[in-house]
Image 1 (cartoon, rainbow, N blue to C red):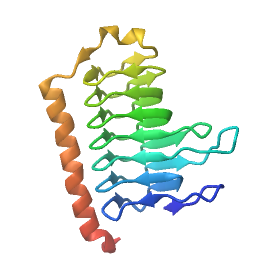
Image 2: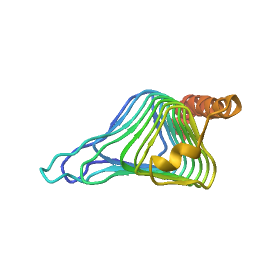
Image 3: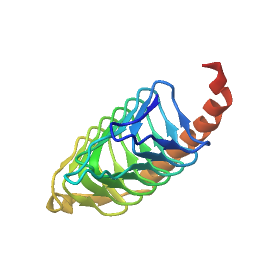
Image 4: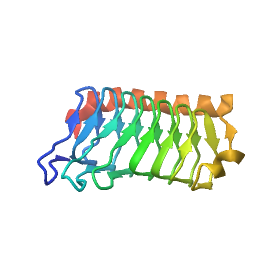
Length: 186
């Protein structure tokens, strides 16, 4: 469902993107080309800052927002999801937040008030809050990172981890094509 927010902003979805009919996109959202937005995802840009302004939620080209993901912005802040990025099932991304290109965010993870650098991997059930994850970092499953200092023990992404992230992104690009092909069957 595509709908306006109270300010009258309506999502802009590129014609090559696929948004599942059960997903809800509300407000100042920009969805670039070949994006997959899965069932029951909720992306909502509707809060304004003290001056009444609002920044957009932007989903970069070739990214995938999987089943049950929630993306929202606090007080007019933005959420920027880079190109070729995967946000896995039931994750929460709450702005202010910036996620770089070719990032993998694992199942049930929570990102808030943070930046995640290009090519990083945040594995399942992790929390990343109030910090900047440099490019190419691997946050292990069930990690809780709440400051830049806590990142000192984090290792770079391995080749296997990067390959897994790339394969997830590629599979979801193919899903965009398949679902677009059968969209009139819903």
